[in-house]
Length: 336
Image (cartoon, rainbow, N blue to C red; front, top):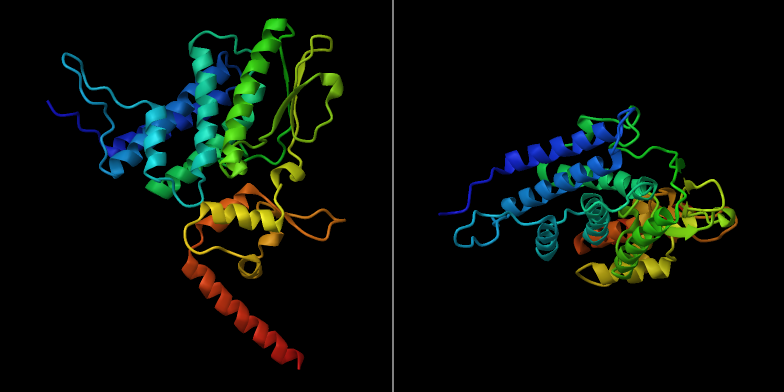
């Protein structure tokens, strides 16, 4: 017996339905088991979308059939592995960071399914969950020409297809030692995933809305990045603060070029290439890519800049060089 036929359209339609259901569940005014159900639906949405991409490539989404058993479709971990192995991520969606983001949610899902004490972890997982929706929207739009934003808007839904401007949230946490230990263990898992992604040159902006995490006593809360504070001596409040640009834009121009050259195929880029693309597309004015303190003389760059520059072809850079040289000649001629 051959493997069952699976429609790509059905896979992606069900995937979108699962993601929309996740957002609807998350934003209900009154909902118990909210975080757990939301993450389960989000993980399911990704599993279906990844399998749809594999079907686009005419790859089987089933394991080899064992005698006396029915066909079993591949797990989300195996689907991620196959998409990564086939380099099937669309341009502009960093596969390393997006994979880690999904794995962070599957880790949370597994803890919920296996009855771990997940209470209070919603405040920890929210930055990953919000970024996941953004990653999903870009992924599905690029691969299937379907825009999640056509069915939702963050102006109405806190968890939406465009990130809200204010990411500061406050939630209550159980002050028991068991709760503190569970949060700390989960954070350690997330930090391990994030460290691996950063070491691999991932676009950290794809990982979470706020991507650096520390567990501290509430009385010591001073970091400008994501701070998760669980205190048995204070009032047990978990606080999430917005990321400092010094953390989201950690690369100098030299470091930016080095990381881009490690990720891209083709010739090695240099500072002149960076200058040409900045001139053409005003990258230094786009805070997604560049940031400069008012007292600084140079810009610093984000992981998103690494991913974007890595996606530009040699032909595009050569054309930009020619245009920039012509521009400089015109400027010199006008000055004479």
